[in-house]
Amino acid sequence: MNTSLPRRQQGAALIVGLILLMILTLLGVTGLNTATLEVAMADNMQRGQYAFQGAESAIMSEMRIAPGAVTLNGSETRGQVLRATIPYPYDDAAGNRVVDVMVGTSFQGYVEFGEASSQVHFESRGVANTPVRGAQSIQRAGYFVLAPNPDGS
Image (cartoon, rainbow, N blue to C red):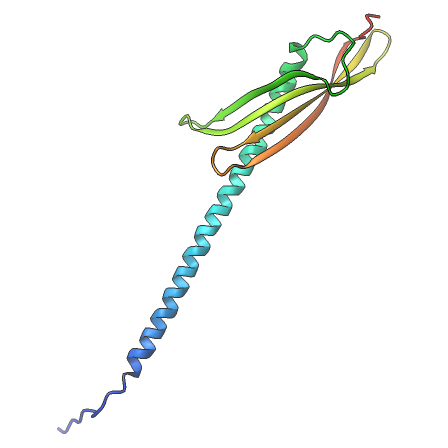
């Protein structure tokens, strides 16, 4: 049996193997960076939703509270703040702050509604911020409340 060994090895397999390994490493690093970026984008979107929903929830609470918490005397002007900014903090089950909301309610006007009553137009504005990533949402809601006429008639 006659076996002959090549006299001089060229090393082409080593070079091709190293090039393929480098390409696979670059693909892996690129994939990892993309996955990390997508996780951050999803977290930003979630924090934005927390801020939006927190502002909406705080405004709904204010709409139930504000009309009974203010006394109108008929001399109010449009845009006059009736309830200073009220904080509405929201925490998760573990007690961590998810979103801070500040809501202010202002007077917008009277609308005559029959002989003995009118509708009072209020507007509540909520500004929500998340402590993590700083997402912010600003929401407004205008609403009417049935009330006696401001002139007492």
